[in-house]
Image (cartoon, rainbow, N blue to C red; front, side, top):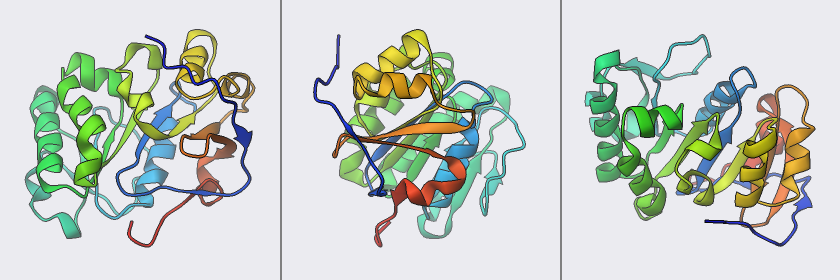
Length: 222
């Protein structure tokens, strides 16, 4: 099923808002800067819960590292980095998304979507948040390496799509979900650069994670 959009975007020079309830897709291979960008996106929101299924040295500022979701009981003073034990990842991930759905207001980060949906088999939970989360003021941020292998909702429901340098099928797939003009931009990015597609305005900007204020602005009621 094609989700191609025919109209062409324009290059953007001004930041666009990341509103509550707007979803985000972050696409890039290992080493491109995908996880670092997700960490910087987390800095922009107050009520954050992030499921980490692998260990690394990325700095997640002012976030409390926990093994399960019991700390999600108090939404308004919590920024959580959830790193469950390997055998508990599926159950903790399901609990995290169920609690986010019931409470509303969270920004939910999934660090590697294919692993979460196809290995941990949480695709039903992810699709529910993507398609219905806006009514609960939920924003979902999904990281992925191979977009052709994941649920199409992760990109088609995303207001903001960040794509690092991509080639072949992945670049074509993302272009079909956003704009045909995005494909050559993604192929020619420098290391650690991304292309940002904003669906409401159909505009594209090129940037890096250390200068997000040139790409996004956060409304007062973030």
